[in-house]
Image 1 (cartoon, rainbow, N blue to C red):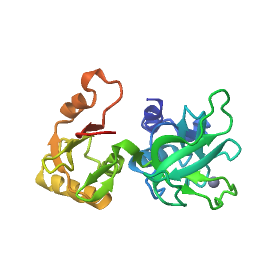
Image 2: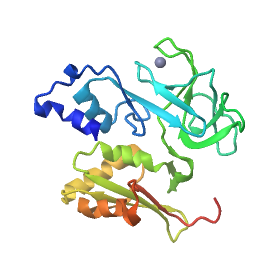
Image 3: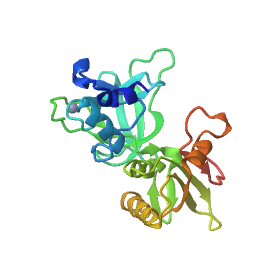
Image 4: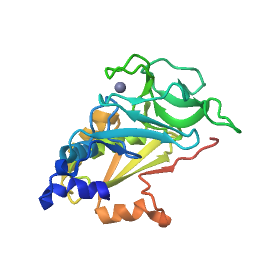
Length: 252
Ligand SMILES: [Zn+2]
């Protein structure tokens, strides 16, 4: 909310520069794409406030956080505090730039130490020195949650990839991604888009955007944003449920 007000400060004749802000550290919202480009949310914030936004990744269980440096190419770890690994589905350690689950061994937890704690978050790591001068291992943006992994017609993806693609479409007010098991026993996706644009061209351009970024063509339903809003907070949820998993699972 404060951020929204800051972004609109210009409309009220207030120059953000006059506020004396040097850095804004964002917690919980993704502002970078997988290639470190700034997504639409990040662009909105950076256009309004300047390139002073820093993305972070925090994990309470491990008592850790990772933060971007001024180069904005990955989130730095603190090597004195944590051992960072990326593993595949079989627990094998992956090399730099290979996408897998983030596994952390924090060094500072006493009493009940965590050893190779599987975070469930999907990303990649980079070991080469950063242009900022630091040699600490960096991780990329979080690309999704492990148990949200979808396999649609042979394409593996995470719901967040679709979400990031939709962030770039101005006329999308809100959305909900629903995954279900089809009659063919594979993953299917129903994408409910909240928008006031119900034209056929818009639907076609949505399909193009999603296919370009996620390489799939889901079923898309355009609904009034108010209807989608109700779905997002169904059952009194305080957090918007942007991904609804209705897949049949024999085991986790
Ligand atoms: Zn750096």
